[in-house]
Amino acid sequence: MRNIKLTLAYDGSKFHGWQTQPGVATIQGTLTDVVRKITQEPVSIHGASRTDAGVHALGQVASFKTRSGLTTEELRRALNALLPAAIRVVEAEEMGQDFHARWQAMEKTYQYRIFRGAVMSPFEYQRVLHYPFPLDEEAMMAAARCFEGEHDFSSFAATSGSEETDRDKSPVRVISRSEVERHAEREEIVYVVTGKSFLRYMVRKIVGTLLDVGRGKLQPEDIAGVFEARDRSRSGPTAPPEGLYLVSLKYPEPWKI
Image (tube, rainbow, N blue to C red; front, side):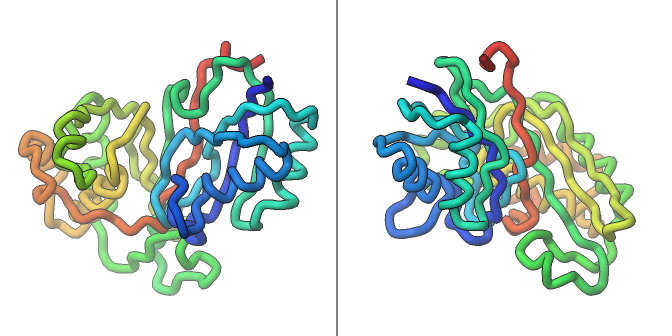
């Protein structure tokens, strides 16, 4: 049995998120159908991150086991020939038997794009958040740094819909990088965040809070108090999904053959 790692890019606006759901198109469901057609096996696809509806990926990682004799390059070509154009397999690699796309991920990096120009290109529709109104970008940059380190992110996560699940899941997360970058040539600011794991809607809630800082509703020094409150109503709104991208994942090298 071979263990295959896929690196994927996709336009999330075409799908109802990563996770397979009955009756709707999802990334995992679409990918599973195509892999099963190619391998003629009842394979299961494991994804590193369960991106939400409308969220995009530049470097999502998935893995599956197969007895297929196709080379990784043949698999990549076959997958891209059968997958819809909104999903591309960037790379296929054979890994050691213990590799698992989700459980071995050490870090995930996301970015959130905010277009600041007066008129957004139609080719960026559903790929960026358009916000042409005044923002204190320097304050947003200062506030972003406040999210680095280990914190209780209760104020920056959406409920799962289950009190029991919310009670049992620790809201403590460690963020190694959190910064707002200005890309003047593209008339954009981009929020970049890296951590081992994230709570539901956590990145989008952080972005909504940073936008409140930019609007002057909050100050960078207020972020500590929002953490301490452990109250979702104290943070900013959940930013729309279209600006969010899963950029890359980091794995320990020994898992690779």
